[in-house]
Length: 422
Ligand SMILES: [Mg+2]
Image 1: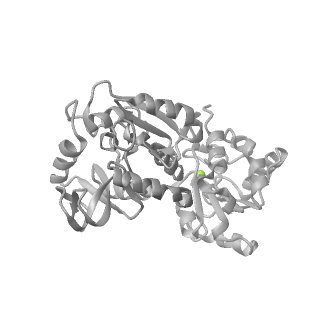
Image 2 (image 1 turned 90 degrees about the vertical axis):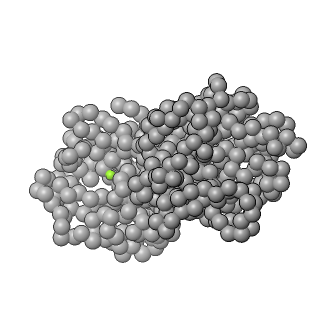
Image 3 (image 1 turned 90 degrees about the horizontal axis):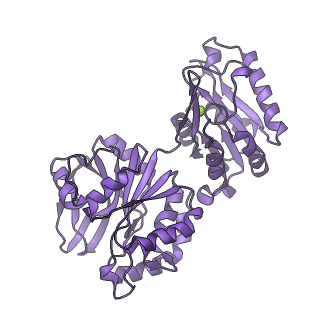
């Protein structure tokens, strides 16, 4: 059986990315989160109940941190007549015994066993959360965290206005185990750009390695990704890649995701570089970002907008006023990008903020080996109305010119006050 669950659960509960200190109450989903989820079936007897590797080891730690831990689970197998309330109670009694044996603690189990009658109780309905609040009046939504493996858990948390963390899920079908990744998103960072226009202020280094308030710019890009459950970051690198690789090697342990490199031996253009990096990705959705701009886009929201758009690519755009450094992006009222406008003074417009979402690994199949992402791909695809826009209002900076590089050095002094928002 693959051994991922432990690390994932540890990471999620351990890391400052969700600022665990602000929560004193934990809600846990059961199937797929605590025990192996039997696909197309229910855990009907204790013999079918199997803890996901790592969960029991994590329980004492959760017990030490959280004042209250509840399980919130839909168990329709009872409503369907596949097992009785007594069977379920027996499973839960034995599960609690095992958890307590290792020093863990569960303060209550809330389950919805009915098929239809109690729809308000069934996740994602708020019913079970309201029961918890009734039974434990001191529990506050603001200080409650939900951990689960399914969309239904995320929706439930949303409906109850509580924080949510998704964990990898272990499922079993016909005796075969399969992990389902918590967040199916890899990130590509285009780190091949050279800081030629920065030469007056920094020695010739890849732009993403330009020091900003004591750290390479790349450090801030990677650190901001701690806000999301990213599995892998692929750095698209070329000329002078040693600077980046050395730094990553020394600092990789600070980040909970894998960091890999896609190395261009011959320059492939931005598009060819992305295609090469995509070969290293295993996720369904891939977020692509420039290594010399920082845009604090909400990547989960971007992914959602992308999925709903039905377009091949979604680009983030940012509203600016009185600027002449950037071209602008035009889009219609449905958010479909209609075209790009050249650089000129603009009083009021949207710029390409350099963060993209795609979900087709074969996106560039028909493109030549070497091509520019912007001119050879984005422009013609926008003309075909195949790109959607995501309007974000987060912080944006492009360190490509000395003036803005200096501004980044000022702005990033405050970085820690706003990066950890979850
Ligand atoms: Mg589940």
